[in-house]
Image 1 (cartoon, rainbow, N blue to C red):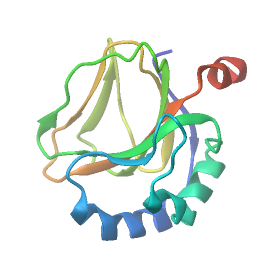
Image 2 (image 1 turned 90 degrees about the vertical axis):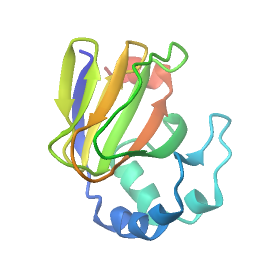
Image 3 (image 1 turned 30 degrees about the horizontal axis):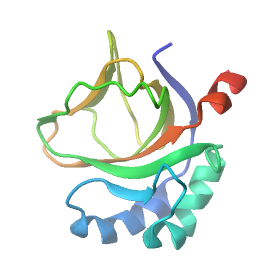
Length: 148
């Protein structure tokens, strides 16, 4: 399966803090890089860490970031051979925000934990009139394959 819903988490307290931070975003907000270095924002964002733990993502990821998908936008089609799986948790979205992986597509409701096969061609679109924000975590491959 290319797109799979694997759970649901409460995102309320995370979004409350995100609204205070998003004004300073001019691209993805890198919270933890692939080498494990955490940003100052991530280190102090306890509600986000609790949400990731509830989604079973604590420690099972290489890098994590918050991506902003602009209104009326289409992302580039891409594939990431080095990162075969990616977890996505929509924090602020709308029904017109859709993720595509090859021939499959899915709207990503707020709070759902989705795993996509990111080593296949994929992109995200936002046909809505306001920006969407998603937490994106690059998963460690052996964790995904052992748990599947």
